[in-house]
Length: 595
Ligand SMILES: Cc1cc2nc3c(=O)[nH]c(=O)nc-3n(C[C@H](O)[C@H](O)[C@H](O)COP(=O)(O)OP(=O)(O)OC[C@H]3O[C@@H](n4cnc5c(N)ncnc54)[C@H](O)[C@@H]3O)c2cc1C
Ligand SMILES: *[C@@H]1O[C@H](CO)[C@@H](O)[C@H](O)[C@H]1NC(C)=O
Ligand SMILES: *[C@@H]1O[C@H](CO)[C@@H](O)[C@H](O)[C@H]1NC(C)=O
Ligand SMILES: *[C@@H]1O[C@H](CO)[C@@H](O)[C@H](O)[C@H]1NC(C)=O
Ligand SMILES: *[C@@H]1O[C@H](CO)[C@@H](O)[C@H](O)[C@H]1NC(C)=O
Ligand SMILES: *[C@@H]1O[C@H](CO)[C@@H](O)[C@H](O)[C@H]1NC(C)=O
Ligand SMILES: *[C@@H]1O[C@H](CO)[C@@H](O)[C@H](O)[C@H]1NC(C)=O
Ligand SMILES: *[C@@H]1O[C@H](CO)[C@@H](O)[C@H](O)[C@H]1NC(C)=O
Ligand SMILES: *[C@@H]1O[C@H](CO)[C@@H](O)[C@H](O)[C@H]1NC(C)=O
Ligand SMILES: *[C@@H]1O[C@H](CO)[C@@H](O)[C@H](O)[C@H]1NC(C)=O
Ligand SMILES: *[C@@H]1O[C@H](CO)[C@@H](O)[C@H](O)[C@H]1NC(C)=O
Image 1 (tube, rainbow, N blue to C red):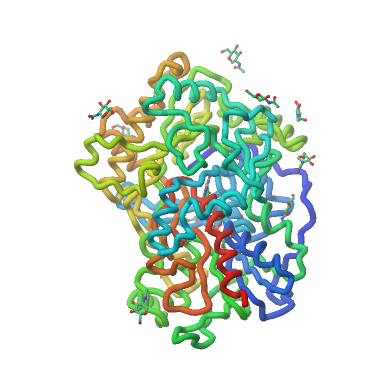
Image 2: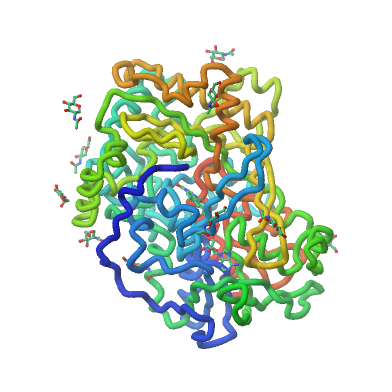
């Protein structure tokens, strides 16, 4: 997704709190032996660092490749509206690129991943959705562990998050269901600044209530319908796992966090129960610098994300024997599924020119306005920069049972509460292509996403150098089903804006998305403009690479806790599901070592 926000990247007043206890060089570590070693202080890793150090006797080391989330240059990861500025090419991102995508006109795509405390929760677009109850029930079935069902995860759903008043303090009655929100450290909120389209989106749920019913809370386990977006924003500021989970416990003397340091491989330390035991890690600050080691008495936990985790497993000899030998790595555990089956959500923006000068586009065109809204945010964390940059409302929809698509394809969704596609409403020009960016006019964007894709790709090693990026193939739109659902999602978006509330608002479709008047046109446009929703999952999935308790098959001493464990990508944005599984994993780990 590309948003032109560069006018806003004025440096912030350095109003940051002092750094907590963070080590910036391996030589500063006080020890080489810990109870647990966590690789990656991202979304899941920070949850584990917090929960495992609740017991003061337990010593934990976290090693994070990225930088601190605090400092004088982090405005773009704190100001919600500036989220698109923490993108590839900035110091907060790994700057990965996919291999050429045959179904996207054979071009490569940028593939953003957070490289900072909080990981991708520090750089994402803040949308907070849990997916469908059926998604978790399917996970439980595959895992052979009832603990992963939606009902049984309920305590963790309420434990990790809470909902707080939005930045503009508006009355949110009727915009969410308090029954589904708990008292956890990750604070979320509804739209923090009104958008001119808000009433039109909501009125359409009344006018077209059969197809697009209003859903009071898409986070109830039944996401179907159109509802208000919840975002990981509190007090007008981004809430990440670094802000919610890690920062607040950095004072604990049993927690060591080492940043700017990449784990380069896991080292076999022996055998346990007839399986190779991996309880040491090797780490370094760059390809040429000295390599250090640390060892976990209990276990090493991989929370390096859906790209980093399989990469590290393969670098350590856990993967497909043949593929590893091609890059000169000897397999210790032959598992051909490591890194395979990558699943992500294809995202396609549509835009309409509208009869308004109150869209957020004005902020991008007018430097004085941009300076004024930045000034306002700096003063009291309110104004347009305090809200989600892409959407105040979104919805999750199923293709009806009697639709002809089901004559051709089997329904891959996890159950009747799970959507096939999502649409989100944006009060500005949202695009995946810099060349589309307008310099005047007001725009509405709707962004269809195939949330039940059947395409699967991979993460593979290109070389044995841990500092070389792996080969990443999300295989976007590589199945006919995914293309067919994208076509339906585009048509649904067009029906939405054809409803009466939009009559005087919409002027015309934007020139490029105007190509979408025929099925052939939609398909061609999709192949040109589809990009990642940044939801990679499945590369160390339950059932194939990890067991139901997230330990790695045929290996001792290692567990995976991050978005790579999902056998199917959840049918929503993936941060909430990641927090939820991390909270339960913390309890699984504590229980495994209770004696
Ligand atoms: C730009 C962007 C926008 C997104 N928008 C949304 C959204 O709006 N809503 C939503 O729900 N989801 C969104 N997502 C997806 C969501 O943020 C992720 O699914 C989720 O945060 C993944 O959590 P994780 O713990 O698996 O990985 P991450 O949070 O990415 O954490 C992995 C951590 O491991 C570190 N690491 C990796 N390799 C190593 C190594 N070898 N040594 C040491 N450290 C290592 C990384 O630097 C990182 O900090 C977005 C993601 C991105 C990148
Ligand atoms: C990011 O990657 C691109 C190539 O994909 C490269 O041109 C660019 O220099 C990289 N940027 C940084 C900051 O590493
Ligand atoms: C918010 O609105 C609801 C109904 O719309 C009303 O009952 C409630 O009193 C309002 N709350 C506040 C704090 O004004
Ligand atoms: C960064 O600063 C914020 C406050 O601005 C604080 O809440 C958070 O805990 C800090 N994070 C770290 C890792 O120090
Ligand atoms: C684990 O090891 C057993 C016995 O060697 C083997 O049959 C099985 O296929 C292995 N599983 C995986 C996922 O590699
Ligand atoms: C915005 O539009 C209104 C009416 O459509 C007009 O009165 C006003 O001058 C416009 N403002 C700007 C800044 O263009
Ligand atoms: C925040 O500042 C703006 C001016 O920049 C002001 O209009 C607004 O009332 C302030 N809001 C709060 C909650 O203080
Ligand atoms: C919210 O932000 C304002 C403005 O920066 C700050 O003064 C206030 O302390 C913050 N409140 C909380 C609860 O963090
Ligand atoms: C599907 O069923 C609905 C009523 O449930 C009906 O309105 C619609 O026309 C049917 N569509 C097709 C393609 O038969
Ligand atoms: C893979 O490695 C080769 C060199 O060994 C390099 O030329 C190529 O660019 C790499 N591919 C990617 C996608 O990084
Ligand atoms: C729109 O259609 C024109 C003419 O057929 C074509 O050149 C252009 O590439 C299309 N744009 C997109 C984004 O599909």
